Length: 254
Image (cartoon, helix red, strand yellow):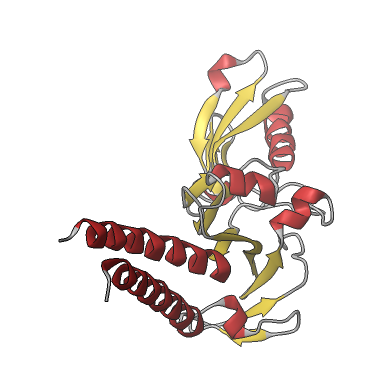
C-alpha cells in the first residue's frame, strides 16, 4: 500500500474514532436533556425541599413588589446623618440582624429595605436628639447581593450584582460563553422558601428581542450547560489536527 493511502486510512480512522467518542460522551454524561425537565417537573433534594422547574422565575419572596431586596446579616452599611458628622458610621449588620448606632443603640436592619431603615433611624434620632434628621444609607458590601455564575463561561465565579441586574448582565460579568457554552441552555436557580426554582432561558432569543431579559437577584445561581454539537465539533477539529500531523509524518517517512 502506498504511503498516501496509508495516511488517508489513518486520517479516516482517527476522525471516526473521535466522532465515536463524542457520541459516547454525549449519551452517558448527565445533561439537562437526560433529565427531561419540563415546566411541571419537581425533583426532591437530598437536603430537604424540592427543585421545581418553572417557565419563568418569580421575584424572590422577600422583595418588595419585586423591586428592592431587603438587607441581610453581614451587609456593610454607610450611615450618613446630614450635617451631623459625629453620627456618621460604617456598620455591619450582625448575626441577629441588627446594627449599632450612636445615641440610639441597636436598630433592627435585616429584612428591611434601605429606605425603611433610613426612616426608622430618622425616627430614632428625631424623637430625642435631632430636629428633622436626614439619614442616607449606602450599601457598601452585601452578602445578599452576590450571584454565582458557573458552567460553560469564560470566568466562572461569585460576583456582586446591582439591584437592577439582568441575565445578560450576569453572563457579561462572567466573560460570556466559552467555546462550548450553549446560549439556549442557560438555567437560573432561585431559592423559594424551602424549595429551589429553576428556569431555562435562551440568551440568543433575549439578545434578538424574541424573549424578555429577566432580572437577576442576589443569591441566584446562573449555570450555562454545554452544547453537544459544539463538543462534537471541537472533538472533530482536534481529530483533524492529529490526523493532519499523522499525514505529514507519513509523507515525510521513508
